[in-house]
Amino acid sequence: MILATALEIVGGLSSPSKMPCHSWSTPAKYCKTGKKLAQVSGSICADCYAAKGFYRMPNVKNCLEKRYESLSNPEWVNAMTLSISGSEGSGFFRWHDSGDIQSVEHLEKIVQVAKNLPNIKFWIPAREYGFVSEYLKKHNSFPDNLTVRLYRDWE
Image (tube, rainbow, N blue to C red; front, top):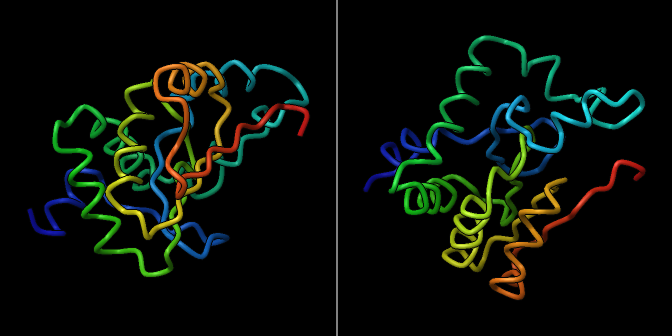
């Protein structure tokens, strides 16, 4: 697989202006916990940055949707590995500047990408305690190069 094909499969990578590295994101509307918290006045998700600004532009919305749909592609892990290794020169990568973990299977795919790229330090902020807990029951830990930061609404 070539880099252009890999990027096409995963829907490309994003370049958040406040991050020194690339990211990969999905629409905030698919956040499992975030969708519920968005209805709670005063919660961090009630004022979700990924539901406003550039995230509302049609081209960005279409790209995020394509990324979400790409999760079902059986080549996703290989394509994501190549996309990151061929595009990211900082040594860092952030998962989900918009969106969140969709399932244990999604998290397992992210973990495999991290294992495939041991020289990249990955960071994933998440509110999906259930998926992370279920993953850890099966696997006990994350690779050393993957930091999973679970956020509570009161932080």
